[in-house]
Length: 203
Length: 362
Image (cartoon, rainbow over the protein chains, first blue to last red):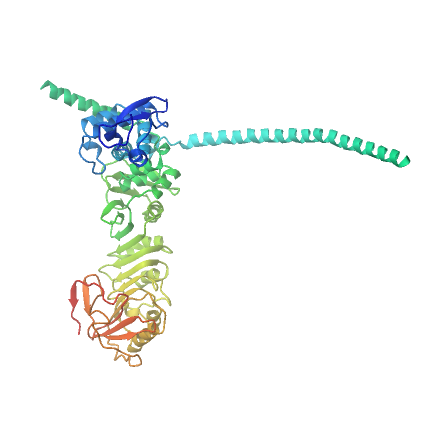
């Protein structure tokens, strides 16, 4: 099924993290610089594993690639206002989790156009906002949260210290317990040897 | 008609959905660094300042990204002092301290543990404090986040209104310091500039002073890259002149004597100074006949060096009447003496490109 991409009609099999495979056209796949660097010249035997990403994410990413195959050549980042209705729909259909997955996949696959649109969309979330609003958007912990986190960490550290101390105590005890029989053994062996030596010398 | 209405409704719904999503929390800092950088590159500088104030990590992110800020310019002028953030091609943003704030919400910010009140609109970041002008606080913070050199352009009308500024910049280092203005500069301020402020790149003083002025023994500008003092260097002594270690110098209104110039050339001839490129001194009083006969002087040879030299980016000097001296390392220098000026050119490039208006000196 897979072969070196010589024409746009060639289909490639993509394998997702679930182990499922699906078809992607060569033209769409060639928008990924990562793919170009890895498989374009040598081809691929069997499905191409992109197992860090789930099927839904990969399908979404390649849906974008398939759509943009027929568009004119990409010329730098576009402003969000210049996006077509299809592009806007594409982004608006995604929930946040999917959007983040698509960004990560697009970044890994190095799909220039999709990545730049995603970045533009992220920038739009923060552009023009003041510091407090930015903190809210990027979900930075507040001072109170940081204080609470620090307290929890201190408690954890104290608990860990206690556990370590206890472990050290028990280790000391076991050491002394283990040492006793060894000393006894040495002593008894020494006694036996002395007795044997004495009996031998008497003979 | 109905399809058009549907389309409009669709667009409106899209806009609503989009505006809702923009206010949702978004874990930006958990994304790959390339994505964070690329997203932040689409911010303007004013937004980057606010982003850097979010947290230490945000500040570090801005420091590491390609923000395009190549220089920070402190423009100190009457009632309108500001900081201008510049790229190679133009202006990226302003931090304003004194002009009236347009309608907008003023918020409190803590910059390096000090509270200031800010408001931003487009490329302007209005920064205020009730008691003082927080210019030092801001340029230090901007220098931290953008890691760009600071240039000071000081153009006052009344120097008495700028005592606060001299108190702020005492002991500071800048890339360049350019002082100009219509009124004479008071000697205490000139002393402060020569003693307490350090310029690394260029020091330009294009303002007259109030007559009596005693310069420090070794002014802080002695080793700047470019030194320009037009209409103001009456105080220049021989010792200061000989101690200058600049790449290019343009000085005027000097009382230097013929022996000072002879000594200057001799000092260069017997030194290993590879920094000096051009010296231009305009006299207030004619220094007297200079004697360079103790050097082996050569007339201009078109095969040895060019005829024209750009003394400034727009002015060209005809060096065909000058005498050349050749140092032991092979460096060629030209001495040009006119009735009102002395020029000393060290030919790093013996046939440099030139362009501009030719100076007609006699």
